[in-house]
Image (cartoon, rainbow, N blue to C red; front, side):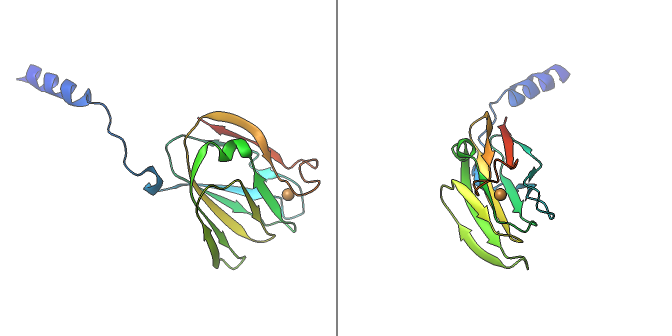
Length: 147
Ligand SMILES: [Cu+2]
């Protein structure tokens, strides 16, 4: 009897895992990235981001600095499926929801943007930068890893 149970268990657990259905409708994993710092430093904080394929992320781009900043990485945007981008004023009022392929997001001083995406391709991308004149040169660069 016990042997039959183990045999049955082995058969059940040997079944291939089923696809998880709509990957863009999972509970999101929230990751916050600060664009610039309050005292005007040109940085991404953290400067290295790691994601996993097949999981839904809500990346919150917070700009508490006195300048506008971009989150720009061509290689990253080519490796993710974007569900939407939502933008908020400093008071937290939602101002827009954008759907479709996104290449770059600009966040105004004091504003916030949420980028909802599912990574679909692995890689290490060192082309994260802010494309505002002079910001990349001042150190606003970073690395994105998709595992
Ligand atoms: Cu910038």
